[in-house]
Amino acid sequence: MPIQILLSIESLAERSRLWAASLYTARSDTNGKLAMHAMKLTAPGGLDQLHLAEIEPRAPGFGEIQVEMKATSLNFHDYAVVTGLIPADDGRIPMSDGAGVVTAVGEGVTTFAEGDRVLSYFFPNWAGGRPTLPNLLGVPGDHVDGFAAQTVTMPATAFSRMPANLDFAAASTLSCAGLTAWRALVVETALKPGDWVLVQGSGGVSVVALQMARMMGCRVIATSSSDAKLERLGALGAEHLINYKTHADWGEQAFELTGGAGVDLVVEVGGPGNLPQSISALAVDGCISLIGVLTGWSGEVPTAALMTKNGRLSGITVGSQVDQANMIAAVEAHGMQPVIDKMFSLAELAEAFRYQESQQHFGKICVSI
Image (tube, rainbow, N blue to C red):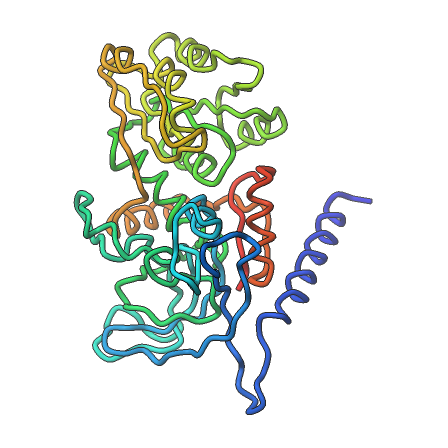
């Protein structure tokens, strides 16, 4: 059977599965009105503590908009919330990413109109400039209710416009993972075409960082423990591929692959367990953007080696609203399409997180609402 037909059958099967699952997330009440649903978390957390609940849509007040949510995407931050690593209030609606359509506009709102497609901000209080503590408060799905809901009513300042070239699922991958990669590549460094970038693994941030680095004309080295995933990273434009399971000294190998110059930026998702090798790979005056701690919360850092290279270790948590506007413009200009591994329905949110736990995914995991 031709591959195109097989793919079409697979696509139809996936759509049917999502449609069937969606029957559990929307129904009519006795008055014929559509009952809205959201996924809520029972404290202290755990994937078995996620449950579907009815919610009452709220009309927008002054400065607010009501949004019919269409998609959200999974991040490690969301996983930390739902599993209790980051404590959340009982009944919290999780998920920091969201894309949807404006269904009502409150008084005083001039930035959006009904029918506009919008994308959430991870930090709704961080307009621009350098981060401050007040900027980093109000994270959806953590400090306040998030986007695992069929409808939300929030300040208009909690949203930007969506990229014109993306559908809702693809757009929902950008407000956390995409913006984190953008800040690492563009805001915290001064990369130029031909510079070397090292990305680790095949998760959401790493894959979109690879895409954006190639979009900027940078050369990319990618690491993974899977040869099959390395092949896919190569298809996305990674010039050199290193299996870190078979090459324990992958940092030294990466350094040599640049001709002994070293990499200008490491997009560090592993944290302390990776840092010795990341520093080995680094160029003089290079930067390690620390965006993840998958190998642990703390550990030893070879500070002398980092100092000798005049290297920088820069902690990064997503970015500002100005950064998001610039990222959206770049995504539109280059026609970039984020990589989505698998789609789940809202009712399958716990299963989506279990799939994330399995580390089988390549790119982003999304939820259709």
